[in-house]
Amino acid sequence: MPKHFLVATFSDADAVVRASRSLRDANCRIYDAYTPYPIEELEHEIGVRQSRLPWITLWAGAGGALSALLLQFYTAVLDWPLNVGGKPANSTLAFIPITFELTVLFAGLATVAALLLRVRLFPGKQPRLVAEGVTNNRFALLLLQQDDSDDPQAVRRILKHNGAAEIDERTVR
Image (tube, rainbow, N blue to C red; front, side, top):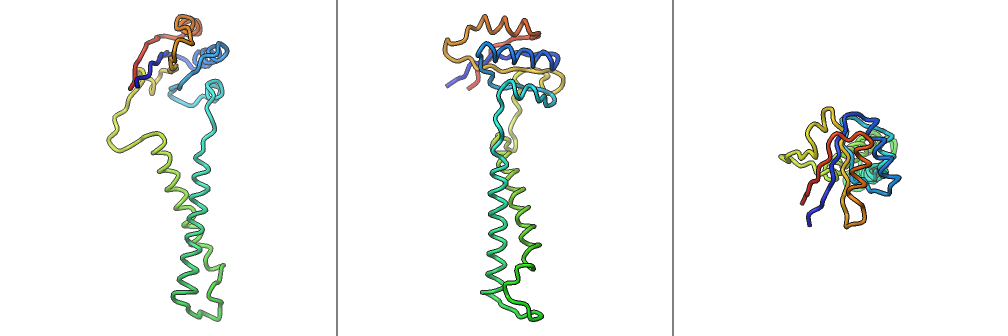
C-alpha cells in the first residue's frame, strides 16, 4: 500500500525546530526528520522514542557470559579434569578473563547486527534520499499524509511561515 508524504526542506536548523514545534502544536504527525548533524531539540519535538538497542546488548552480553561459564565449567570439571597446583577443578577466578571476553564479543556483535537489521542496511542497498542535499547542508521534515484528517493547505502554510524552502509531495511503496 503506497504511503503519501509531504517533504519540506529547510536551509537552517532553527527553522526546522520552529516548524516541527508549530506542527506539533497543530497536532500534525511528523514521520521523520533528516539532518546533516544531530539536533537534540528536534528529537524532542518530533517525539523520537528511546532505543531498545541497549536491551539487546544486555541480553546478548548475559548470554555470552553464561555460555563462557558453562563451556569452561564443562571442560574443566566434567570433560577433562586436571589437577593443576592443587586448585579445585571449578576455580571460578580462572574463568573470569574468558567470561569477560565472550561477554564483550557477544554483546558487540549482537548490537551491530541488531542495528543493521533495524535500519535495514544490507550489503548493496542503494540509498534513497527524500530530498536533494539532506546529508550535506539541507534539513528535511517528512510528514505522513493520513486520510483527510490533516488539512494539507494549513500544513503548507505552517511550513512556509516557518521558513520551508521547498515543499513536495511524494508517494513511497
